[in-house]
Image 1 (cartoon, rainbow, N blue to C red):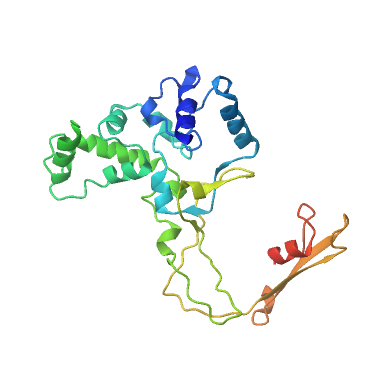
Image 2 (cartoon, one colour):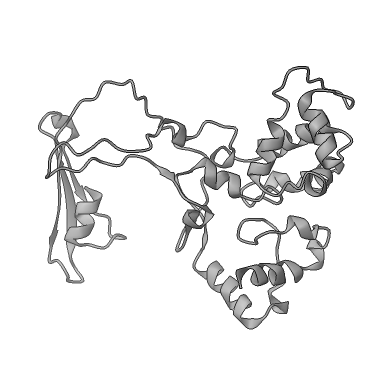
Length: 276
């Protein structure tokens, strides 16, 4: 039913979106085009209203290349600048002749000039350009390749597969626990899986499209440090409860902290432990 829902949502669009080609409309949650909810069946209208009321959106610190490549390139929801590039002749050729739909498709095209004898001309006879002309009927592969790069360059750092990503420096597996009563901390920040795993509900605030500066160097020397954390709460469970968190590091005393939880957080032992 999801394919039928996508088709109905894409069909009932306002006049302002009529210039968008049907082939470019893939999923309203992943793209920036709008639909006319007044023309939708009641269940689909309720679905979209509920998603908006509860702030359903793509969100996370970082995403895997697999997730990034699954995103539609046309009207990419994380790139407002990309809308102005969607109607060029090269973009139409990419959409219809090259059958480009996703960021992954676009990246594949953008990397095709990494061959010997390539020239920046319409009559380039390198292996990549000749192959593109033969398979797609494209009259100017170089211009389409350049447009593919231009499309990717409009994407923010977090969603651009051409940029260095946290995933590049994260191990596929964590080292084993050093003892039965210990657990190796999973410091990896990349969301893995598919686009489904990148959606969040009850989000708030503005989106952050930049990546945290947190690249792990596997050559750095490891040093084990023991840190004790705990949370406590006075009058736990009551309306006037007051909670706090504590951090104790005997090896680095300056790291010791006592924290009073702000009132906008739930005052409980569990909250204090999480904050610590």
